[in-house]
Each structure stands twice: as structure tokens, then as C-alpha cells.
Image (cartoon, rainbow, N blue to C red):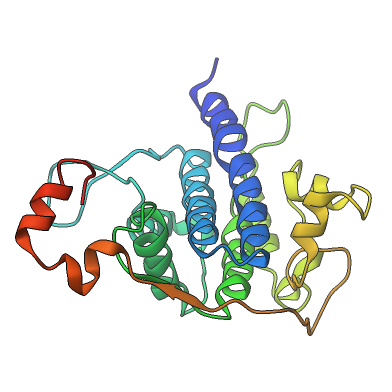
Length: 250
């Protein structure tokens, strides 16, 4: 079997499909005001979307070579490194909002690397809306863009460019709900009955995914913070830290 076919299968089934489910889980966790669960699911969704783009473009979703280094390194939960590798795929013209870099660093730090609340954590009222916009922008590129027609052995001039032009069409910025991925899980969920729990979680207060375009949504925002035990004043004793470290990893 052709290697790219295998990579496409992993990109779709293991990364993009699961990322769609992680994204819905993040929105549901936000609505239930479960901060850490929202952050973890949100980070996982963005990580898997970015990794799927790499696989769709014949690039490793596991390893990268950092700048000024000759040794490869695993991506892990490093969203900045993933974004940087995706941006190297010139023909995609991969574009994200200016605030996205800071937001991805926030998700990586407080979601990917803070699953066990090893550091203080917080979120702001606009965290979910930023996730919606970020996912919509990244997810557009989560597809295999072929340079030839189905069953055709030879490259078709301009075919890739035409698909990329469609992805980056400014009309979708004005009406984001009009953009659809072929065989995407979110698209399938949107076709389910309105009472379907996954569909309800997806469309709730969402200006980027749904049946109709929304300019304004109203919802109860969540803003919270938490300081873990090891960062509280009573834990400053080195003896306490050494003792507790025998029971849990600090």
C-alpha cells in the first residue's frame, strides 16, 4: 500500500477524527465550568489537528529538528513547534490570527503540561471563543490536497493551488459556518437531530460551527483559577517536599 495512503488513514482516523471529539469535549467541559478538563481537551484537539496536517503532507507528526540543532526531538505537547513545522509547508499559505501564538502557549502550558495541576492554573471568559476561532482556522487545512484527479496517474497543473485558494477564500471569514470538510466528524454531527448531545455541545454559543451564521451569541462565561498544594505557603518546607515526593511526583 502506498505510504501516503497509510499516512492519510492515520491523519483522518487517529488525529483529525479524535481532535473533533476532543474539541466537542472541551466545549462541554467549559459549559460545565470544569477548567482543567476544558484546557486538556482543548490542547489535545489543537495538537491532533496540527499533527494531522503534517501527516496529510507526508511529514512526521512525531519528530522535528529544532533550530540550531542537528538532533531530532519529539513534539510531545509542544504546540508552538507543531505550528512552526506546519507553517513550513509553503503551498498551504497557513494563516492564523495574531493572538493564536500566545493562546497556544497558554493551552500547552496549562493544558498539555499541567494535567495533574502541578502549576497554578486559570482561564479567562473568552477562552472558549478563542478555541472556536483557532480550531476553525487550523481545521480548514486538515485534509489531503492531491495534485491529481481520482484514478489519474499524472499531476494536474494548478489543482493544488485551486484547493488552497478555496480554503483561504475570504468569503469564509465572513461566513465561517459555510466551510465544510469532506467526511469530517463535526460535519456528520451537525446533521444529527437537534437533541443529540454531541450536536448540542458543538453548536452552543458557537459562531464558527453550526447550520446558520451568527454575529452574536450569549452564554454564561467561565473565569476561574487554582493554586496547587505544592505552591501554597505551608509547603515551603524542604522536609515536606522531600517526604511528599516519595508519594507523588512534584
